[in-house]
Length: 172
Picture 1: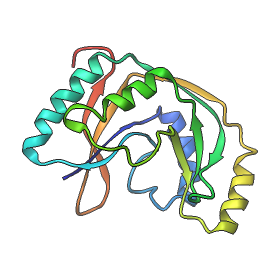
Picture 2 (picture 1 turned 135 degrees about the vertical axis):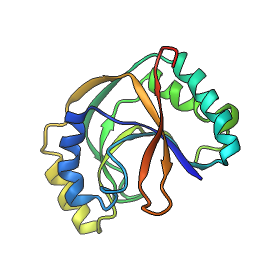
Picture 3 (picture 1 turned 90 degrees about the horizontal axis):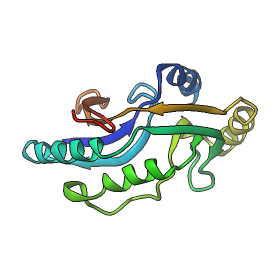
């Protein structure tokens, strides 16, 4: 089975992000707006119990995380993804690193750039146009998150669903 680990923002922020994703992100119906903490990985039914136990320990020793969004940015020219930049804090970076250790240990496929995707899979012309428009949108936002989620990909629908939620800083 395919799994991933992510933070979902508050409903208010999700709604704002989805107002853009509906138009500019073909993955809109596959997964809610999120900050990826761990890229997709494969685990068997027997492995997932050990992984869940490990993540529970990570969660209870990690504090809640203040999320500060500062601007709209892009991964261009590597790819045409437009996103809200999430400032990388010590707490966020530490949680990300812990989720690549123990039974979750494997090489990082990308550098950790915390973000919330607004648009992707655009042509170069669309990308340039949409990026300029979105850079004019007020992007300053702050909130504290108290939980993160282990997601499981539904093979039939291709949708990512919450498999288990972990609360930061306390016993589950």
